[in-house]
Amino acid sequence: MKGNLYELQKLLDEFIEKREWQKYHTPKNLSMSVAIEAAELMEHFQWCDKKASEFSEEEKKEIAQEMADVLHYLLRLSSVLGIDLYEASKKKIAKNEKRFPIESAKNMKKSGC
Image 1: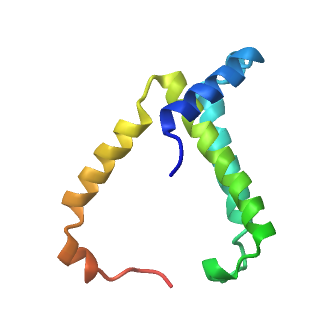
Image 2: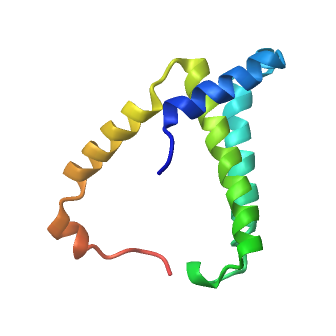
Image 3: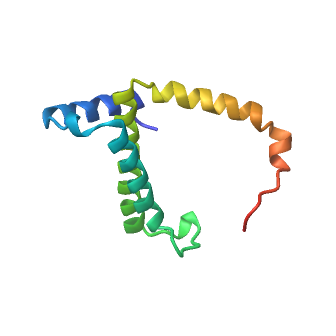
């Protein structure tokens, strides 16, 4: 990946600050915005069983925009709450490595379809 999470977060925080939008960026509003944007992302896949390689470049551009919206709201929420999202993510991966050891994870049966 090009760039890094901290640079992106700083860029986004500066964007918000210049427009004086901080007053709207409460934890409740930001968390709701994450869910709303995630739902908009899911719309691209609703009723669709395409493989990743089957999406057109135009579809990928639209999906990328929704993914960026989700990421931006998560970054803003982490700024507002003072959570280091990079470190939180690394800790979550480490936790999941213990929770799902390689051998048992490979043989894991999934429920659902």
